[in-house]
Image 1: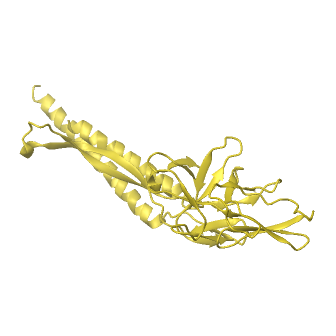
Image 2: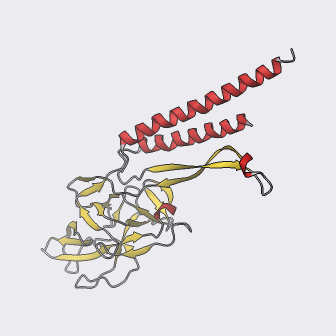
Image 3: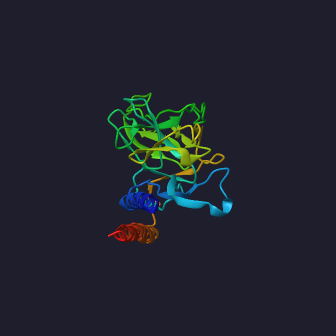
Length: 270
C-alpha cells in the first residue's frame, strides 16, 4: 500500500512541477495569468469503519486554478496596444471559425481592410454607436476603421479613449467614432477554458459572458499605448519550485524505504 501512496505523491509532485514550469515559461508573456495547483487527501474508509482506525492512502490533484490578478502595466506608445485597468476581458472573434475568444492581451493592429485584429487575425469586438458616439446595442461586432469616410477622405490614424471609444481620423480632419470596445466579464472566471495564445473560452463552469462598455459597473477602463504583462512573480515561483522538488524527493525516498523493508521481509526466510 505504501508504494501506491508514495507513487501518488510522485505524480502530484510532477504535476506541480509542470504547473510551476509553465508559469515561469510565461513570465514575459503579455496578458498571461499564472496557475496554482490544489491537492486533496484520499482516505480509505466506509460507513462501518472505526473512525479511530481510518488511514490515508495518499493525495490527488483536486484542481488547477487560474489567478486573474492584474499584472504590471508596461507603456508601449502604440495606439492599439491596449490594457484593461480593472476587471474584464477583450472579446475577439476568429473570422474563419467564428469562435469567440476572451483575452487580457491587448496587442492589436489594423489589417489591410481596416479591421482591428490580434497577431492571429482574430477581430476585436466593439459595441455599435450612433452618429453622436452613444452605444446603441450590447451585441458586439467586428471593430472596423473604414479606409475612407463618407466624404471620400483617406484614413489616417486610429486612437482609443479611456472609455473605450475607438476614434478614426481622416485626411480632411474629420474624426469618426467607429465603436466602443466591448469588455466581457464572468461570474466565475476561474472556470474559463485556456485555449492558448493568452485566449480563454467560456464554459459551463464560467457561465456566459456579460458584455458591457469600459468604466461601467464592474468593467475596467482602457489604457491605450500600454500592455498588461504576465502576473507571474518569479521569486514566488522559484520558492514553489524548491518546495515541489523537496516534495518529489520525499516521496521517492518513501518508496526507497518501502523497498528496503520489503527486501528485509523477503530475506527473513532465506
